Image 1 (tube, rainbow, N blue to C red):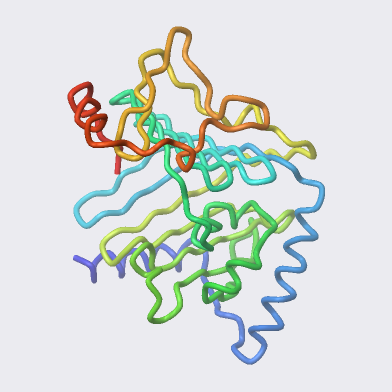
Image 2: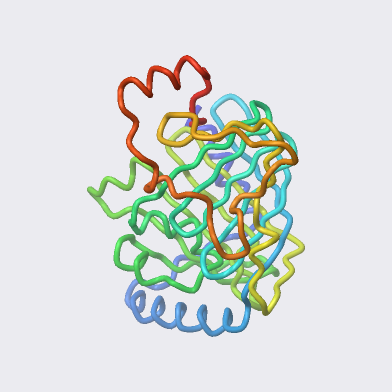
Amino acid sequence: MRTLISKTMTVLFLALCPLILMPCGQAEDDISHFFSVFKQKRDGIESLEAKFEQTTILPEEKLITHGVLRYSKPRRILFQTEDPEHALLMDGRQGYEYDADIRQMTMFYVEDHPRANIFFLGFDNDTEALRAAYDLTLLVSDDPRGRQGIRIRPRTGSEEAEYFLEVNLYLRESDYFPYRIHIVNDQESELYIDVKEIRTLNAQDHETPRIFLPEGTTIVAEDRVVDVVGEGGRFVPAGNTGTEQSVKDLPPLDAGEANESEKASPIVPSE
């Protein structure tokens, strides 16, 4: 099955955007130059909104969904799909994941680790941590939307391969924002995100990239229910520039409280 998927993806890639690795002898100079241009193209762009199509490829099925992507500096990004209705928002290191089917939002915290920067690489200008932690390779594409691209791989022997095998970003020429993101999760699954109708703004927008939680939504953090949304619903993060209570700030849960929480609700965080 893996061989079949690999061959299929190879054909798809060759058809859509043939790739050529940059010459090895000039790799470091080319990467330094690339990131210099990368930052210049992003100057003045503070936020954006775009539509996307997400294709998840698994051993026995292919799942396609559509959604909206919203980003605002310094580090807030929202991926929101329509069917199923699902939202993932990163605000710095604080994360929120909403599943409409079970009316539950899970709060989580991403440790201060370069891995967290992968959420933002296609949109943020800060690239130093990634350059220090991962193997980066420049790509050249024949796609008319943009020739430049970059491949991110965990370094040999690192624990990062447990989380992903590689991430490929294909960037449009005008501003180096990605028109395609390809994530290889493991040997059995991969994900394509095709971005279109990108609209950029020269002002920050902290109102639009938020999740609306309807009344009755259960909020879960650290394996426990911490709140239930009241009448009228609620936006998260709550304010224009502030965030909801951080997972790190939640008080520890003692054994007695944990037992009561389990009795009150059987809901557990989504994986």
